[in-house]
Length: 230
Image 1: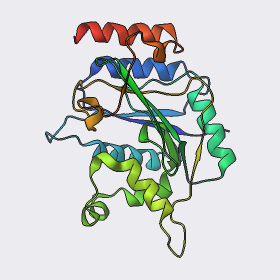
Image 2 (image 1 turned 90 degrees about the vertical axis):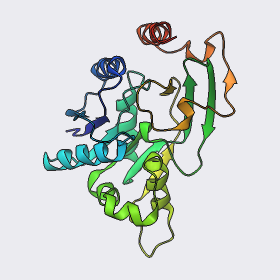
Image 3 (image 1 turned 120 degrees about the horizontal axis):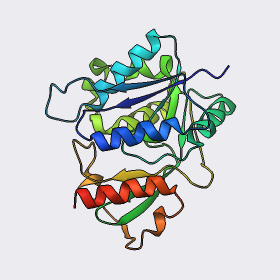
């Protein structure tokens, strides 16, 4: 039996994205056993992605889950995303796995970029074993290291690659087939990185060619969002 969960941290400040995220997950060819949406009322002004992620992981662990994939509410996921990620995760026999190429698209600046990561993957397309990762996400561990909450993915993969007497998190990367997930940048709500407001080295895409292969209803959603927030 394929048992796994997905977690989406959410601050209730971009309702359109969350509803679209729920729709995308409902269309997955492999359905998760549970989708944790961590949307408790915000108590701080700054982005609190780390706290929400930890909250969701603790609940998932309590419910008996150990395999988890992080789903960010504003990004694009093809319908077979979870199926391919789960299969790659199981075949890898790693504690954590992610996609080594990041496709980013900024809606309002109509530009894109592709990053090749030889040692890590972005959080929005990473999966892991909760019991291996959760101990290293507890704030008392992060604070002495000076870890910024916006670098959770980099932090976890760096831990994986540390030259220690034993590997505490064993990770792996793979190349996603065609129609990869896309990190959508926009600046709506409380965003976690500067790429939403100040994208660097993005290439222009005025004709939207980089989005042509995604499903029509998803493209319609993004186009409508551009109109509403223009």
